[in-house]
Length: 256
Image (tube, rainbow, N blue to C red; front, side):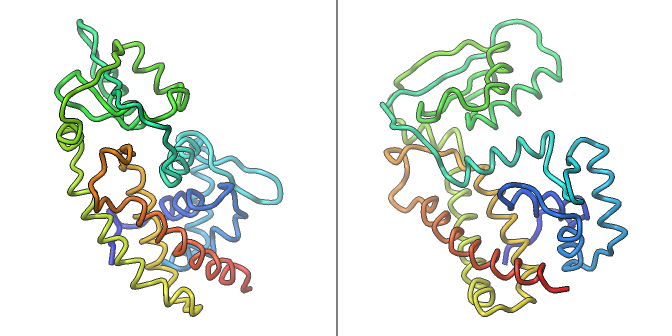
């Protein structure tokens, strides 16, 4: 079963719960009850909510509800796109960004790397970023603005696209992790369907792990995917798993 990348904190429980909710908003009482799945007390959860609101990660809305804000709201948008795997028809062309000559600060370098990661570009070598031209160029304009300040764009048609994709992303590792996550969902979905409340805590961890994995999918066009690429199967499995999880979580949250 997939294990959490790091020990769960009250903040991570709140963030993961709202990131998996559409729209990303819930009453404080519901978030407290999710924390109880991990033996986190009401005081601990409400302190986390208050700190996240003060830090700009949550907005307080009507009737004691909290909604994602700031960077977490951006992350929710990225996650939604990642889960949907929304791509455009691929012409066979690639987009290439090359860093302009001249000195750059450490913060500029870090901002560029974050922007390129959000835009799903792979780094061929220092200062050269590429991806197939199959994503909406109007998506994430703030990330594009960061790249525009530091890079020059090119449209290219490289030879041996499949080899290029493998050099930009560790596709074998992504596929292996996807297969592992699919097995974890199979292990749990029957218990979720049967209404077993003890499946909620491990199910929460698996759900968060799958959503994080979607965020690292390079979203390649089908022409560049291997015959056994598990992206579509992972998404189909997760849709069924998430429906079962949401039904059981909803029933748990309605219990008083």
